[in-house]
Length: 303
Ligand code: 13P
Ligand code: SF4
Image (cartoon, rainbow, N blue to C red; front, side):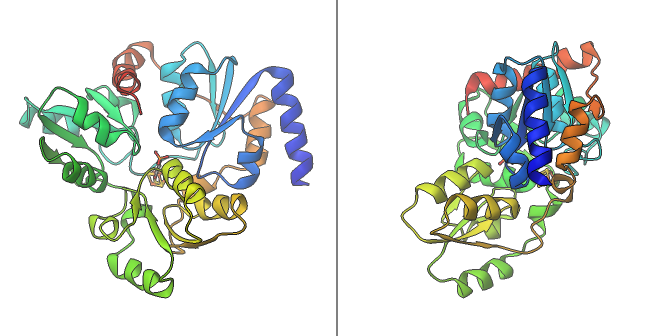
């Protein structure tokens, strides 16, 4: 059944010249039919360079909006229109505009997990894999980092030469994990390396052997000579790694590390998009032009 749907998807996307992008949190059966899988930064770069006229994003809304911003001439569909990112939608533009007024001499550095409206207020966007490099590289010394306090704290600690103001936003999936849980899992697997996403709390990342983006965690585990790993990010990454490295062992940091929004996209949704269903991203051109600058800046500084 799964193979049948995958075959139909593969035939239709080839026939109609469609590029399917999938974030690494998508399940294995969706990654298998994707033309490209990766972390938020790699997906953004791919969105710019893909030659197909239609893109289907298997991920969450801000990712599909990023593709549309970078390639307005393309038809961009979000495979499942219910897939939002609670962190991205956490702050209204008006709230951030007020905070910005309080810190007029601060550059606004926005995590890419933000709405298009919020990106219009940002000087530059960052992803989890590019945040440290970009905060170091931008000329401004004062940085208002929005919205993730955990990623912001991680960056702030590695870039002590800059002044940071942080907001109290964050990812409900990663932020719910407490240090005690990490200590207990490490004690249960004393030989395992602990790999953590920077959206986790500072007390959790402080216990890590490696901190990085979803792709960073996967690359690290694949290349490492170690045999066991505790994975401190969405549990799809545990599944992908176990599939890619059958001779290594991967343990989830927590059974609760599940992003429901990343779980709702199915192969049936992708097939539906290829058959003209699904949500096409429509974006006001004036809004796009204001918001895309921060993404273009991110790509200019590199990942
Ligand atoms: P990455 O940039 O590591 O892919 O992270 C995206 C995300 O939503 C993590 O929660
Ligand atoms: Fe958003 Fe967190 Fe889900 Fe990533 S894991 S998409 S930040 S809610």
